[in-house]
Length: 191
Ligand code: SAH
Image (tube, rainbow, N blue to C red; front, side, top):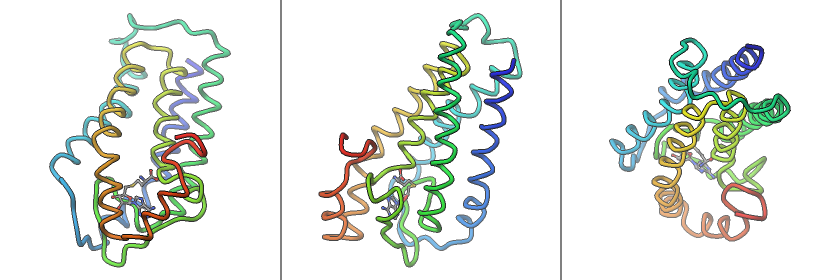
């Protein structure tokens, strides 16, 4: 019960961090959109894994038969990671600012962001979502919630990542190529 409540608070915290960016996103003008239909479907799949499943687990007994019974210490580690993710999410959103988009888009006066967390990795927001789905699994200690979350996110990540970098390279040319040479994707110095 306690884990569910703390998870819920942090989960709402993420929503709160995103809300102002979502509102602004609707108002900014986009000049290019890549594979829009596919991208919307991917976002919906991720919403199942990161919103629908954990909420179903918290508010209904339907998934209780898949509980894993992880030890409390593991669930606390998950909470610590999820909390760290929330801070990272806030920081990344602040840095990316109006250039953020839930799908693959270039907006009018799009700027290439390479500072803050973007100094070390090209996709810190995706790093945060990897942390999210893994920690969600640990905190809620449930097979179905865990597997659906990780699979949903893996699907989007694998299908999108190359297209996103291709789109950025087409838009920013040498500047992005150079940026790619000095940074990794999601884990500083590793990958
Ligand atoms: N992949 C990044 C951004 C996720 S949001 C991350 O994980 O932090 C996806 C949108 O961000 C893309 O449609 C693209 O328009 C934009 N984007 C990605 N990398 C960017 C960068 N370095 N600077 C500016 N915009 C970027």
